[in-house]
Length: 145
Length: 145
Image (cartoon, rainbow over all chains, first blue to last red; front, side, top):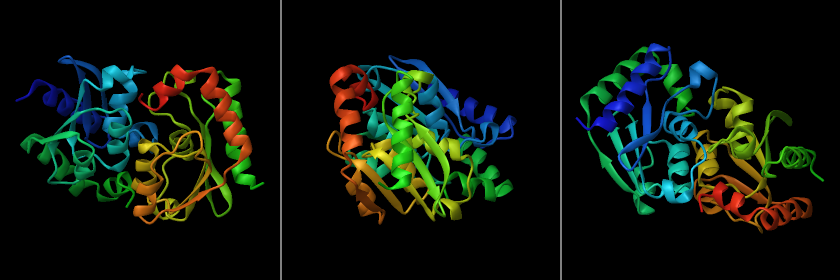
């Protein structure tokens, strides 16, 4: 198991324990995590703190040169908002735990030259499958449905 | 002058007074502002609180049906991140103060059926022109350059 994907999964699990949506992410530069986060819709009443956004926010203000040599790990395929954030900052590589539960804007990322790797990770799939079954309304809210 | 664009401009000015980046936005539903915000990169050390994102965040958790009948007003053409947030929530109409200083992802919005209106507003243009001249490094940081 990739240690950084595992860190993103730990974030997702933390979110679930807090009563939130189990999606986690970490931003990695030079093989070091510079920002970690998880979806905080429930915890903070937030409409914008998806896991990826929370990781970016927790990384703080970074220079473009840092983003441009970073990798974003996320447990779930990124929605349009998180995809846009990746494109804004020119993050060149995104490693995605799974895209079975939800397929986001991977092709928009690829079209802009972002390297996209799908790990098809069973832990990630199981976390989301159970959550989507348990809380379909909350999940729909999170993706604007 | 459109009262809601004026509210977005007031937000932008508030940001400037706080030492921040002068971009403001309001989310309007049924002709009422349900969220207002401005860029808070400087004020909160935030990488994600662009004006549009701050307005969405301050609107709180809304049902899809609300977003789908809302209009987002923003003083400046939206970047990829804010564009993605608009697409995530299915906001059908975006009114943009100006796109002379910076042209964002308007075509991505249009391609997805979002109505985009450019107001070419002099107040908005002047605010950004002065800011970009005064603080080019901060502006570049805000757009990932």
